[in-house]
Amino acid sequence: MPRRFLLAVLAVLMAGTSLVADDNLDVVKLTVTPAGPPHPRLRYRFAPEARQLAEGNAAAMYYRAIVMFQQDDRERKTSQQVIDWLDLPLAELPRDAARKMISRYSGVLDEVRLAARRKTTEWDLPLKEGGVATLLPEIQEIRELARLMALDVRLAILEGDFAAVSRKLESMYTMGRQVGESGTLVSMLVGVAVRRMASTEVGHWIAHSGSPNAYWALTCLPGSMGYLAGGIESEDLWIQGSIPYANLLGAAVLTPRQLEHLAHEVGSLMDSQWTNGGFNVEFSSGETRDVRVPAGVALLPLVLRAYPACKRQLLESDIAPELIEAMQPTQVVVLRWVQVYRELLDEMVIWARHAPMEMRRALAQIDDRFEDLARRPEAVLAKLMLPAMSAASRAVIRGDQRIAMLRVVEALRLYAAAHEGRLPAALDRITEVPVALDPVSGRSFDYRLNGDTAVITSAEKGIVNPDTQLEITVGR
Image 1 (cartoon, one colour):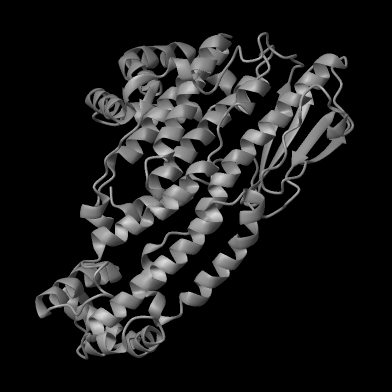
Image 2 (image 1 turned 30 degrees about the vertical axis):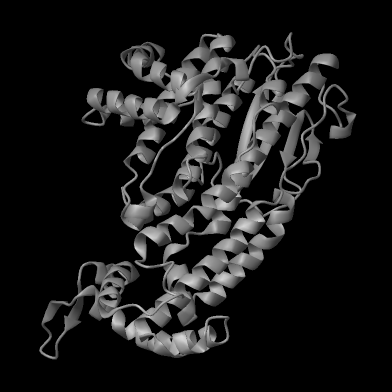
C-alpha cells in the first residue's frame, strides 16, 4: 500500500469514534462499580514483565500471523464481520458466533501473543532503497489483527475472566508499542491506533459490573511519546530513497546523466497528473486529450519558477558561490527543496522530544509556518512529502491522554470503594493513589460533579481534536 495513501487513510482512522454528533467533543459515558486495589497491586498487567520476555524477533512472528490470517480469510469476510461486531454495544455481542471465530483463528492469536513476549522487533523496511514507493502491506494487516484481538478481549470480559483479559490487553498494548517503534511515521500512527483500540477495551473492562480495578495496570504502561521523535525523524529516509543524490546535491555539480535521473524521479513525485506521465489538455476545438510528456519535462516549469528564489537563498548559505553558479537550475532548486524539507523536519524532531505540555506550544507555530511556506517556491517538496506532523503529534498526545483519563476513572472507583460508593467533590479529595495529570497541560484534569455524575475533561481545550469528555456514574 503506497505511503501517501496510507497517511491519508490514517488521518481518518486516528480520529477514533465519537459517541455524540460533535466534531469537537468525544463524549464517553461509563457506569461503573466501586473497586478497591487488587492484591498484589500488579495482579493485572498491561505490559509484560522483563522476566517474561524471550529472545527472538517479534516482527517475524507478526508476519507469520498475518500470513496465517490471510490464508483463512481470502475474501475478507472475517474482517468485515469483526468490524460489525465491534460496533455493537458489549451486551449485544453474539457470543457463540464470536467464540467460533476466535477458535478458528486461535493459531493466529497465539502467534501474536508470542510475538508480544519477544525482546526485539526488527521490521527491516527498505526505506532508503524504495523511498515513497516502498509498500507497507503489513500496516493494514496489523490493524486487522488488532481488531481480532479486541474481539477476543470482549469475549473474556463478558465471561468475567479478567486474568485472561489482562493477558490479552497486554498483547494488544505491546503490539502497538512494537509497531510504533518500527521507525516510520506511518507505522508509529498505526501503533498509536492499536493502543487506542486497547484503551477502548479497557473502558469496557472498567464499565463491566464487578470488574477489578485497573489503576496500577494502566499506571505501569509506557507512554507513546518516546517513539514520536523517531517516527518523525525517519521521514528523512524517504528523501534518501526518493530523491537521487540527495546527500550529494550541495557538494558537487551533477553530470548531465545524473541531472536527467534527478529530474525524472523528482518530477514523478511532484503532482498526481505528472506521475501518470502527462497532462489533460483542452484544445480550441473543444477536444480533450491526455498529452504524454516525460516526468523530467513536466518538472521544468516548476523549476524555472522556483529557480530565482532558491538560488538567492543558496547564495546566502555557506555553500561556495562558485559551486552554486556552476549548478544547473534543476540541481539548485531540488537542493533548496531538500534543505527546507530537512530544516522543517529538524524543528519537528526537536519539539517531539519535549514533554507534551511544552510541545503543544509549538504546534500552532508549526502549523502557521507550514501555511506560510505552502505558498513559497522553496517549500514545494516539504508541502508534498511532509505529512501533517502536528496532527500526528496530537494523535500521540490524545492516546496518552486517554490512558491518563482512564487512570483517573480507576482512582474514582478506588475512592468510591472506600467511601460507600460516593464520588469525590474534587479530585484532590482522592488520597488512595496519585491522581493522573493531563499530559497536555501537566495539570489536573477539569473535574466537576453534576449530581451523581462525574465529568472529566482536559484543562486545555482544542489541543487534541476532538476533545474527550468522560461522564462517570457509579452504579447502584
